[in-house]
Image (cartoon, rainbow, N blue to C red; front, side, top):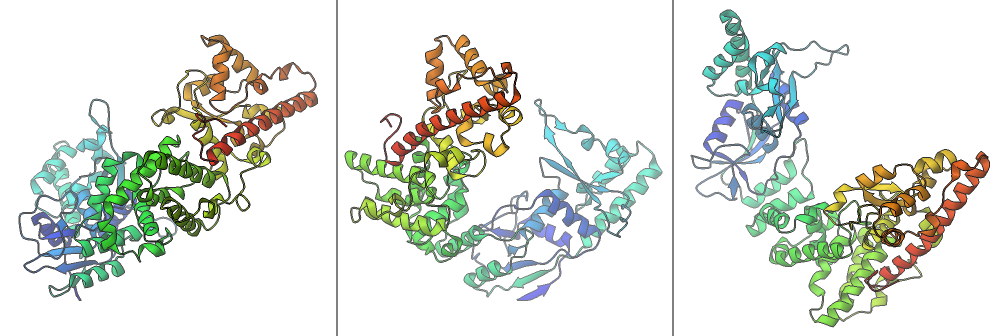
Length: 582
């Protein structure tokens, strides 16, 4: 390995010609605009920004490559692979060519004064950009030389290390509105900044042409020093391509395209690695990812894809439509890995599907995955795999052990917190209500994946009523059993009304009267009679009012807890509730 110097101008020339390219296994852009602005500011202050890692190329490229993001199509033969430094070079190329759609970077023409502690503020200003409905880019001033200059700014793109003298002169003339001397002074100042950018040295470590691909890959993994370090997936992508000659990035793009709902639950990259680990009889954790035989992963990719797609299908059939309503993500790779063992014959498949349903719900309502979830998911996977393959007993699967993992009691259901928080049982209660149909009590529409975007979490007994007049804490009022998922319009209409009042309004406005409202509440597993309460503010005594509010709330919570527990029990037994009854 050899250390060399190279100016930003020389780097740009190689990017422009295509002599420098990225190995396909490199991840995509990971820097945010704060990192990008800090990079340019560091260059203008002559501060070091690290080094790059380059592999020299002979007659034959060892890796499949692609140009940097935003770079033109290559016109010359590739002579170098950029193994480390992609984020820095891509950030420089795109910002200095103004290639970001949602931001424009500007440089302050006068360097800001240091703060009291001696810290120099950044000289780079980021301006957020957007298009209006007519396609016009805002803010408009950011494209107006006069207004930009009046703010003491100039576009960073005027500092790019190439011959842009004509464009720079034109911008300066426009900015100062024809003042020849001011234009020349401004142009000279920008030229000085451009020269600083051109001459800035971004050093590199060079692996010569004799370096074997495996060695280059190993160095890439060990020496990556970017501001956003490589994660397990980034490393495995590189190893996967070196081992198989296939692009995992391309496979993941195809997965996202064919299974677009997956990303609403979990990171596709994460579930692929977790599924592969389980299929290899390893825990779905990072330590296992690096022990995978990537040739086996490549050979089984279609099965992994089918499994992941099936896992999403199972959750959709259980009316769990996204990660916000998914009680535990632990189940997803287990489902994906089990797909290959599902029987194909009709009745056998139906029986196996009931077991899968039982697994999904028992995992969500018991304490099975509260601790050591990776190890326990492997244990459950092994037991379910053997059962589906006909070599093991169903009661040998740990999650089905009632003694160790009993269903929640009525008291535990009452204590379950607000489902918007990451509490497994609380989310399971909400998931069961969506499984029941969750028909909006005003507009009559059932909850679906598409409609969830317009649904809000609503307190059945108003939060303000319980806290201000019932004397309850936020934890006591914001519980899963006091939650409905209803449309935004319905939620705004109900607001803080007493249950009896908004029920009466719904009955009056429903064409079919009270039976319709009863059915809609039942679709949330909500009792009707216990909500026919109110008149609290007709009670003169504050103590008696508080007592009645608390009594009504407790009665509602206990009745609903009984109903929810019966529903969860049916689901945990594998029944397709509510179609198959509780």
